[in-house]
Length: 120
Length: 163
Image 1 (spheres, rainbow over the protein chains, first blue to last red):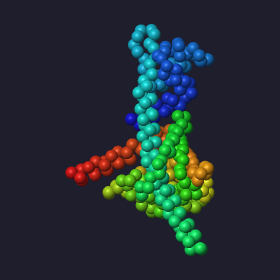
Image 2 (cartoon, each protein chain N blue to C red):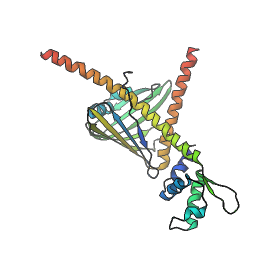
Image 3 (cartoon, one colour):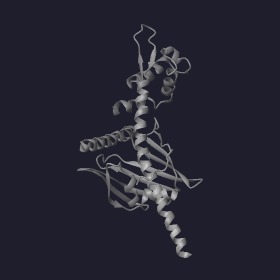
Image 4 (cartoon, one colour):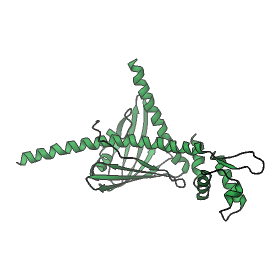
């Protein structure tokens, strides 16, 4: 699982590939469609798609020549969930810290009152 | 322990897709001085760092620039040790530490915590961890799941104990 997530992260490390994913999130597209806006060869775009495919982020149907590229949204979802898990763990730690900070504040406040009481 | 503030503070995590870093941002209803204290005073640190199911034992703690630390997370007969150095200790502002899990001694994380006071006695903490490979970064992030699983087992233990 970590291995697949590493591949997803590596695949998304490239700005062109991130752009391809963003465009595929709107609709399926052929390699030709995807290559059109870029100043690069079809082969270069194919290479990027291959990396995305190996990470499980996109798939290609067998529809003869057209072979549209399809975004596997659930893989992106998996990554989001994975970060969310980590975030929740950090959040639990910080909410323990919130509790401690509130205790410290409560502990500091009476001691200040006490000092005031003593000096009066 | 459970005097909860009605916490609406979101912990924000950013895992850069092209750099082996993890950035954590969180705000607290306490001034920077107090949050800094919770990070550097060992008696306070042990009270919040570990999951509830885990006891934290400090073996060594010298929170000064050039100092170091080692602590263990202990649960039943399982123990995980962590150590590192306090690279820079700048009271109430900035804390730079290294962090290594002894179970993976080749991995080291360089962690910079910045404490910034906000209006109304609040503060923002920004923590940036840098490691030397994407693989290690991903491993660290996915290890959170193990802790979650441990907590899950603890809850199961409680249920089983109750019968």
